[in-house]
Image 1: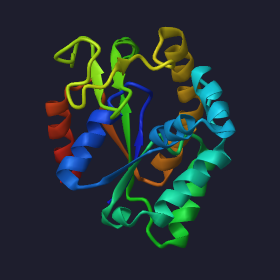
Image 2: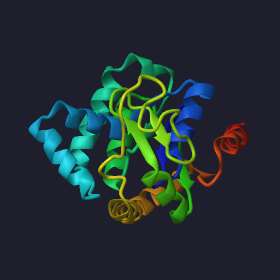
Image 3: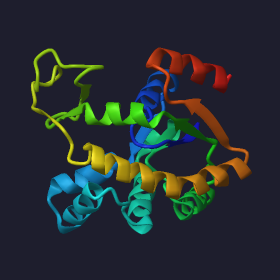
Image 4: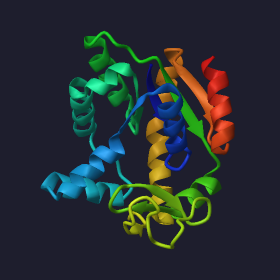
Length: 214
C-alpha cells in the first residue's frame, strides 16, 4: 500500500503515521525529517532550508522531489509499502510523484486528507517538545515527559522547534492551505482522495482508519 498523507501542520499526521506503521507495517517517509537532517549536517543547503522553514515558507519543488525520489529508489524497506508525509505539497510535486511511480510501475493507492480546527492545531504545535537526541515527541499538556525538559526515552534535552511559535504556525497554515487545496482537488479527480477527522484522539482515529480501509 502506497499512501500520501495530507493535512496542515498539527492536524494529527504523526498519530496517523504511527497507526499506519504499527497496524499496516508501512514505512514512514517524512520529508520534514529529511530536511531537518540536512539542517543538522550544517551544510549551506541546510542553512537555506532552515531559513525557509523558520519563515514558514516552502522549500522548492525540485529539491524536495529529488530527496523523495532518491529515498524511493534506494530504500529496500519501501517494497512492503510506505506513506509519504509532507510530500507532495504542490500540484507540480504531485505530478512529479506520479511520474516517478509510473516509471517504477507502482502507482499511488490513495491520499489521506486530515482536517482539524485551527485552535486545536495551535495548541498542539505550541505545546510540542522534541528531543534533541532521539527526536521523540512530547506535549506539555497532552503528553508531558516524566521530568520537565527531559526525554523519557533517552534522557536528551527537550526543546521547542523554532517554527512552533504562533506567528510562524499561522504563516505555515496559510501557505499550506493556499498550496494544498489544488492537490486535494488533484487527487479527488483521480478518485484517490480519502478524508479523516484530525480532531479525533488516537484511539478514535484508529477506529475510523480501520473502517475506511475495510
